[in-house]
Length: 320
Image 1 (spheres, rainbow, N blue to C red):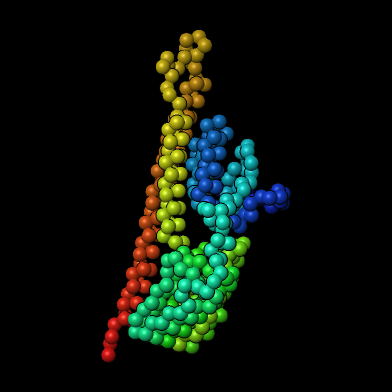
Image 2: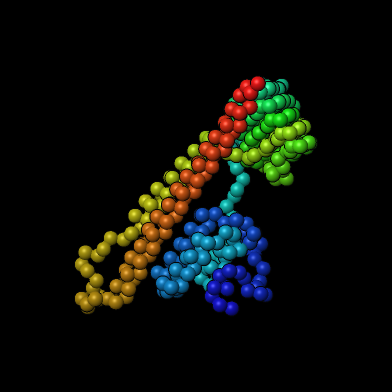
């Protein structure tokens, strides 16, 4: 088996991963790829890899998408062979979780109607046990991202006749779609995902005639800003750690025990400089990639909002 083939997968007959190891099918995060990159840099500095092998494995690291693709890259290097996956469960900052958002009561709004116009329910409001919406030649949006819930299971009933209703739910909420479409349809893409422990269950039901009911899962604007700030702080901390980790040059030059140049010291410092150059190059590359990805994400969000605004504006026009 060639080196390129060994980087892509495990060899036949290899022993199974230890208990508690990350599943090979799980998607790897940027932090996981960064840990593999750090081990490759250490191996380069210690002489375990030459520069050609280092560049080949580094390229494979940044192309890897799952733990199964990352694990073979450092299999022959000292250190832990399998990394623990990063937790993807969203937790509330105040520690209360979903229990604080299931408040009981009757709900602050129980119905909405749009006829040649539009309606919107969003922000801080309480979703009742059953919310009814009706759109005729119009459109509406029911946004549950910042809402509280009157019960652990709520029903959002949507009737769209030559119009549309869009239901937005936060991550972690279980969604069940039971609507009927005639020359129209209900969006089932968010159905089937298990919810977080204690999270409410949202049942979307109703009827669509020459219209549609969409269901999408999105982070709130405040959560997006918080995650963006966390990523920015992490980048600043990595830069600061890299600057502090660089060693100051020796004032007396490279001298050995007998006042002559020490070749081992020269080799070690040359590798250290190469390591710093490679780290800075890939940090800059990763930052540019993250900035482009963030711009694309914001652009897609703006396009969705513009399409929703245009759709709502068309429904509000009086064509008679």
